[in-house]
Image (cartoon, rainbow, N blue to C red; front, side):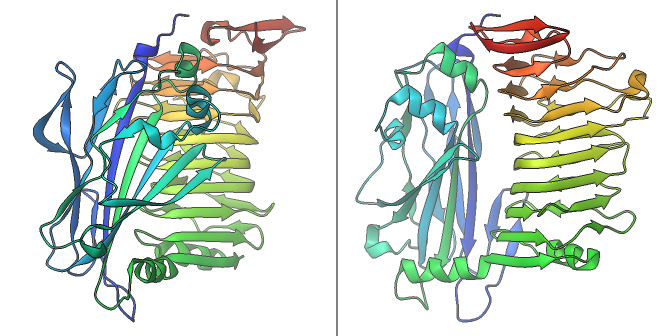
Length: 446
């Protein structure tokens, strides 16, 4: 299977958040259609100009997302995420620039290199680097910049360009590109808070964080769980621990809203429901069992959402995990017992309407031993934007109805590791091989 660096795709996502501060709770209003969240009379817009791949220049058209195709090592591409104060009051402003596939990019740039060097046109009289935060679980690095021009006051009508281009690392090889094929993302998030009432930006954003950081505590009652999720809003950073196993009422399920950063610790407990756990925000879900009595999917990541599963066990009467956004599976298990005449898959990754990206680092995956004629694939990726990377895991006996792995309509599936009770050779990455022993195939480097 031939893989080239020119197949690499970069997606830049923009998210703007404006907040108004005070001594009491913040006033909020949300415009989810445009991905701009507005609080009180502080309003900001975050945009960039559309990239023209034929000229490698920016047009005058304002957009919220650019997709870059056919990028090559060492090349410079124009990119100008811009924040504008469209409100009527001074504000403090900060932006977060998050890059995924951090481990791959570090390997390409070299030991000790600063990934921030890929951005150019960054004006240090306008922006000051406040912090660099690495997340090993999500494999990301985030650069936080504070607006410092005009004594840190972002005035009404003012605009500020975060950077104006990015450079693809020269050390990026085909092997690196294969590891992150289609999943290289730079996400820019802007936050503004009313300057009035605060001595400085640090005090303002400390107040913002204090309001939006919510430790929901240990919860063991279904009604309390439903109420906790119902009260989450854009910008919230929340955490919850299950105090015991819980069965949700009929027709109820957990939904994590867009704009929410959520950590759910199942604490070894089981959550039972007849609806999928749906994540539209940024979630880390760990250490327990999700038992979903549905013919649909047990867990879903919506377009724009990011989910990291750590040591989770999913049991369903339909499919396992549905990904329209970005998901990482770290150990645990998925067991499906689909009796639906329309076969469900253990992992379904969609790229037609969304940009589904799934990384599987380990775990055990199997169909219930009965009714194998009604089961789907272990992995079904569909659409040109759908990508699945398999670094490990144990995949048991396949369905007798469909192929155990499917890459449909231009989707990509690349396998770098794992053990399979079927031959996965058609999807093994370049430089790797599937070796059979006693009816099991193990994927290793050549």
